[in-house]
Each structure stands twice: as structure tokens, then as C-alpha cells.
Image (cartoon, rainbow, N blue to C red):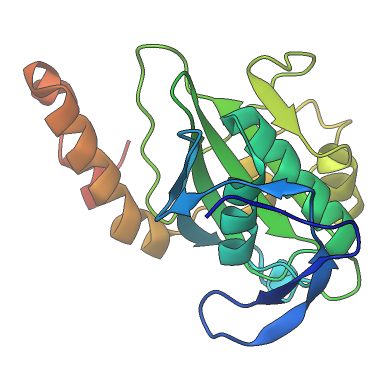
Amino acid sequence: DAKDWNAADSLEVYEWDTGKYLGKIKQVAHTYKVIGNMNENQVAIGETTCGGRDELQKPNGILDYGSLMYIALQRSKTAKEAIKVMSDLVTEYGYASEGESMSVSDANEAWIFEIIGKGEKEKGAVWVARKVPEGYICVHANQARVREVPLNDKENCLYAPDLFTFAEKMGYWDSKSGKAFSYVDAYVPLTPEGLFLCEGRVWSIFRRAAPSQEKNFSADYWRGVKD
């Protein structure tokens, strides 16, 4: 239920998957009612785990992906506000899960929000969010989706301040190479196994969403046929 809180109140965080106690964070003045994966403001969040680079798999923080999602639902009126809530939380308290791809929506727009930790030695996370254009759909199935990261377009693309610099520091991308930055390539590189297990589901949704275009969605896409 929705509730008002006192300034001294806090929230204990337990890992969504295991129930393990992770720590305590400050509570906000008011939280919204949440039922399932949607709150009273029609903000909804779903997720799919996409893993990511091995050295980033043991992040340093107290907010796992499940807690992050449901705390954001308790604290947001819009999808964009939910993204800000999640980014502010991991900056302050750190992230405690592997790479995640989340769909964050409200009554008016939908975003894909992707996040991954910085490994055991650094607190926080790097993340990117892209708005799904009007009239389009996006499908994510245990793979990261965001490649291009448009700059200076806060209406359609948001990202962590160190999204590019952290990738460069870790050797995932070289800004002087002339190669465009890709979140997928930098942080969650695709693997043959991942493509085979995950992209068949993406293909299946697309061909059902546009049955008149099925001839353009060949099964060769997910079966690994060259080119």
C-alpha cells in the first residue's frame, strides 16, 4: 500500500532471488502502491538477465536487480523517473547483480534500461536507457539490446556519466579508434551460445508481431546461418 514515512525511517534490502540480507537504505517521504510489477501510477518494470563480462559479475553494492526494480516502482510516477531513481540508488549504494536488461514503461512511453556493475573493486554501476520510438516494439530475451548511444538527446537516450570513460579505462572501447561506441559490444558481448539460446525468442516475437512481413524474418536469423 501507499504510505508516508518519517525522515529517520530506513528500508532493509534483501536479495530478491535468495532472501539474503544486503543492507539498509534511506526511506523516502512517500511510497506508492505496487501490485506485481506495476504501481498505482501505471509505471511497470520487467527484466531479463543478460550477464555481461566476467570481471563485472561480482559487483560491489547492496541493491540487487529485483530490489532495485521494486523500490523504483515504490518511488516513481513515470518511467523516466523510475530510471532516475534506479540510477541514483546504485550511485549511492552500489549494485549487487549481474547485467540486466529492463523494460520500464508508463501509460505514455516505454524505455529499455540496461545496467551492469563495475566489479568487486568499484562501487556503483554503468547503465544506459533508450526510449522505444512511437509505433515500434522492442524485444529483449537474456541479451542486452542497446548498441548506439545518441549524445545530447535526453528525450530519447539517458546514460551514466562514466558510461564511455569506464569502458575505455577497462579496455572495452578505444575512443581514438574511430569505432562507434556500442553498449552491447563494450559491456555484454554477444556469444554464439547466447545468440542461439536467446535470439530465437526475439525472432519468434517479431514474426508474430508483423505476420505480413514473415518472409523478411527468416529462421536463418537464429539458426546461425552465415550472413
